[in-house]
Length: 170
Ligand code: HEM
Image 1 (cartoon, rainbow, N blue to C red):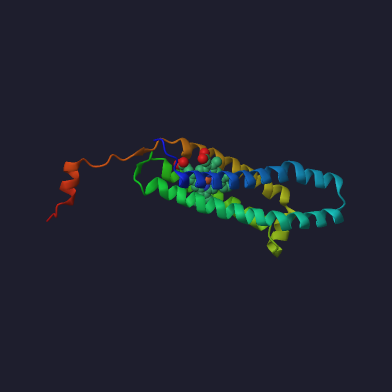
Image 2: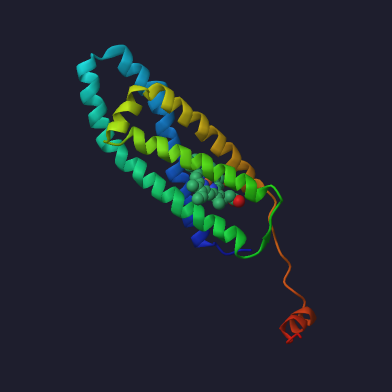
């Protein structure tokens, strides 16, 4: 097909930009920012830096989650509604990806939140960021399998079969 499906392209842009922001931010925070802060700042300056980062990062986390959910759900609907023949593993694997993504969203939201629970989570920031980084790796690996899974459009019924299907039965 020669034409560009702009809805597909837009959804893909949304999904990929949000995914690289959220996943890249998690890796940066866990592997560079956190160790650097622990190594070189006093507890007092750590606190004010954390607060300044949290204010900014929480907006990006919220936007990334919204983008991933909207583009992901529409994308999924576009795989099932037009009647693609999908491999047997597709739906269960999508279910696993969805649950892992929900775990990532929960941890990321709490870590960048303002509640008392958020403060408790942040005391173990190293552990939670590690968990989120591992979950993100799994989600990206699963997404690669879903993306490359063979999907063939179900054949349209032949004219004779369509006439037969349209006949009243009974
Ligand atoms: C941390 C969260 C997420 C990450 C890192 C992520 C990452 C990805 C990546 C890298 C792809 C492949 C895109 C491409 O090659 O164009 C993808 C595809 C996809 N994602 Fe996500 N995603 C996340 C969350 C979600 C959520 C929450 C949903 C559903 C509600 C979702 C549904 C989908 C669907 C349906 C596809 C297309 C699969 C296919 O082509 O068959 N994703 N995702």
